[in-house]
Length: 484
Length: 95
Image (cartoon, rainbow over all chains, first blue to last red; front, side, top):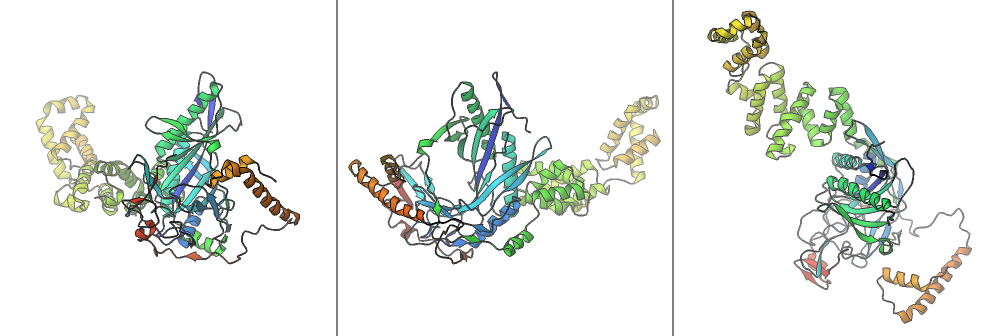
């Protein structure tokens, strides 16, 4: 149970939240027409007569969208329904030229499933998925060009969407945030949706209600549509739940309504009251017979499924010895996980993970780069770790070498060779430096011999400094003790 | 089953049809005649009969994921009552 509780002078309240997430399907062409799904093309260029709702045009279902939906369903640990149907959802809006949306209602392609989310206290929680169906997206309305007119671009009209509906299992903003990040990670691993919330290819509707802590009441919920970042979803839940508590504690009533979250003012305001709510009058889509899937197809897709974040994380923990936290961070993004595996190949994976999550991530962040654009390749990061492991360079020098790698993309072996950064492990060379340090600091030598043994650290520092950081610290330590 | 004037008004609104107040009674009685006629179907026993969605029992045929349409914005916009910069232009619609 989550310990997220809204506490006031009058009582304690628990938050109940469910999410509906629209994910744009990655496919070349639209779900029911042959027009391109490319984002950012010229206005109304990727529109066919089907998308424009011209009379007599018939939809034909894109096989790839079906496969992508099955893949996603499997990624959600869900039942794939071998029988599903399309329905018409009727409403009038300027960016919906058909006057209805082709969607799935009674018989969705994907049934119940679940996702396990990782929480900050190290625990995991299972969030149940109610269903997932496929449908077409609407076009885009632009309201800010002219005060009296709206401008409509139908390029997005007809792009395939997967709508994922969760059970009301979230008890805190944190859980909803963790779920969205996990879902995004899964669809990106699968290559079924790019998961970019800021570009609108993943959009979230948030349902919130509250109840007195410790009860099983089901109180009225409110829905906030199209909240477009993980952070905003978390804020919206917090703000809306507090509003409900406030209303109840002042003897008010919550009406079932659609509200809009304002991320600047951190408030929600009503969009649509129930009396104006849409009455969609769903009915079976007469232009498309039911969709029947074969076991062969489902099994084929199951076989081709990539390793998902949870499985990868478990493997990194059990086979490579990473901590669960490190494994989770590395596995959230498939590109990062792939990079790590390549760099860790045949080496101490924990050391590679430390470098990756430390200096490497810091470098990417500083340079504002994606991992794909990294100047340091996975092979070179691995080689750098080898140089430390094999005592060729010290950890301190390695940091300098890494800085050079980040600037020049060079092989660390070459950098170490050319710049003469190899660690000095030659006893006589180190002894020569030690002798010089001892000779020029007679007072400290005397103090040390008189019992001030913690001066040893100072001597080690001096010797390493004299060697320009190249003397092996362990050897310096050992030899100094002998000489002093 | 019979509908009242309020239901007629609501259905007309949802379908974006204008029904003048003086036509409301007539429309209502037409609605009710149709409903009564459809209700005759209730006399047939449909226990254990799977609902028939379509009389067309052909399987759904799927399309390959290929770009075969588009780049006809001129034709798409041809019937638009108003257009600007390649967009359809409509009276302001904000919810």
